[in-house]
Length: 351
Image (cartoon, rainbow, N blue to C red):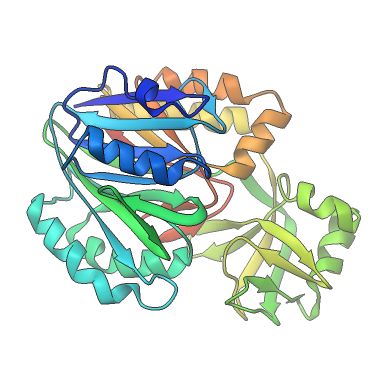
């Protein structure tokens, strides 16, 4: 299979798809002002080709911040695209669509991946989708777009998750998750006074969450939202740690980008040697896949901001390009199988 990436910093869709012939699956990454027009135009250009889209930045060796990016797969894949609606209330109501699509592409463990773009309520969405994928061993990679909208097959949806099932007809697929943080000290917290609907973290070990964070890191209220780039929380999940970013300060509480529940065990994280972590990820991928057709990734917005702050973003994209064709989305949350994580990179590699 082959991966195509086209872009326009000004949002010129015709320029972005120049040279794209006979795609078998398309991902549209657009800006808020032009998203709906781009969805309609893309469907007119490639009628009937399975497609999903969202509002967000894209990249290959360059970043498209406010234009349009198009990622397409062709030459040896089978694909279908669809949507689960009402994700804030009852996404399971539409799960039969995914069941039929798995049969349609003859999905199998070794060669099929689910790629999704979500408008929100990610944790519930992933639990729903993965209930079907897990029994078949199908891996998932995706992320959250901006603006509360996604697209599938030329139509705009709100309160929904758009997904594509992609089957590599010429080799394997495998997903990866990269964490550039490590545990800081021996801090261990029990969360309480949480608001699951608003992602509010009220208390840590019985003390106001904001004050606990400030006291440990010696920061002011105003510095909390940038300090989270270096020191997010981590939620212990078996042998894994899910990163939890701070979104805003709400009184004495902290609003987060992912749900925290009463009695969750949290730890404090600190930035590791991210350049070394990236090199290790690339080496692992090369060991697993001596020959690679494509890599599609989702990088968190906070990672993007952190890398830009350290003048590393361009170097990072150059290093990832050594894998071959690499392109992706800057997301507001990353999906890895049944996990909704923050400040991470998730990707799928095609043999």
